[in-house]
Length: 253
Image (cartoon, rainbow, N blue to C red; front, side):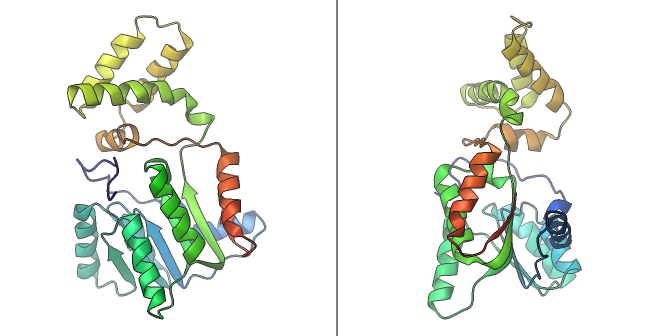
């Protein structure tokens, strides 16, 4: 349950994502006609190497919490946190299931558990349905009234042109027991060039060309997870609306 097909063979890239910065989210809320959210507690699910979470904790008021089930990534972030003496940040090496149980136990023990911001970048599309439901439970149970959720995700129809290429990448990787994208691209390219004017094969070749020079670690995490969930925007809208239950959730999609 802890990993459930999520890539563990390599750590994720050490990247900063400004879109999950509290002030950037509030700016977008203002543009959309919503009131900005005052941050007291902020949660990031799947923080990777922690670059964004660490930066946001240092540069913003409020208390920050994050979890990632890659222990190497958590150790990396904790080391920076300790060296920089960041006092308003707690980091866990929990799976989403473990984090949900942790929060429920804390609440049962009389502790106040709730978040004004819950953010996750990319994660929602790379975990299986069970983990997606757990993520939704965390949001439903621990997002404060008037709080905001930021979820980035691979969306249809835009990502539809990558689906056939990703399927071949994954099959070849499993068959040959490799995550080497030079080999994966070489095989897939030869396959697609057997009939290069076919629309599907054109999309496959375009996907290869688009990602030929992207970071090798990104390619592994994007295309070789066991789960690759592609909802339409309308699907995500309905999913998030169903969490509201009249509680006044403000959702930024």
